[in-house]
Length: 342
Image 1 (cartoon, helix red, strand yellow):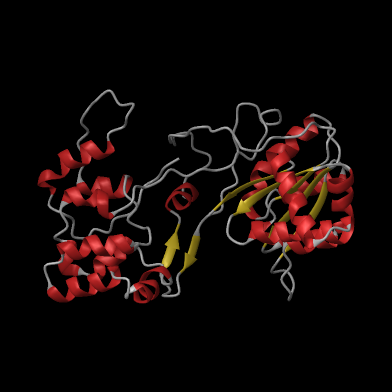
Image 2 (cartoon, one colour; image 1 turned 90 degrees about the vertical axis):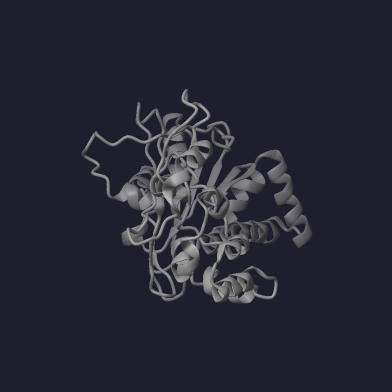
């Protein structure tokens, strides 16, 4: 799925004379029957290059080559140098300055970037991938997603929105006139038989693939389906909450939740897992359950692995070394599977 990036009207773009040929070679689709596609520079920046990304060291190194003004050239070269990495960290990474904002900070340089260098200067705009959150058995002919809308402010109080999610959020869901390119990829999870216990850990939008799996297991009349879900607030962030609670009330799902901001002390899924250590050991250690983990790839997977190791030590009587070895063996056997993203 793809969308467009906004390019302000006051941004000085490279001269358009050679833009058409340069852009055509770079963005022609491999499946296209035409060998040349004419595009304006603005169209290339809006639709194909990620000008809203946070620049890396190479960006400043290349930009310094085109700087006509000595002070700007020197400053850009400093950011590109090994000695200037702390300055670049403060200027760009911590402040989340975008490539476009950097260009606006160097006005004499931005008008001297050759059009053929745009594809070296900016990374390509990547397609967005989302886990399917529905089972075809319950939703024939339809695909449902769980998408978190990216919308926040940087430490400089600059607004930031997701390229795709902001576009998606503005669509009229009642209209049938919206079209986008999509593709389907096979998921990585290998699901157990309906008779095998299944433990799923899915904070945030990590619950998306588990909704489809839960719906599938309901159709198979599977038993011992357990979900650990976490997010910030129950009232605002309990994704598919009514459905999950309904399944739990009917006895089809064992549901545990952790809402980190609903009390003074933050509670996350790994904390609830430790509280449920006896149940987890019964399912994993004695009944050989399969454990699936999905969600953000930053700290969460490590915290969950630590919680599982805690369970193995305290309920399985293992040493710290043996607990880690048991978790590694589960991974090798396909009993512990992860699907995470950044």
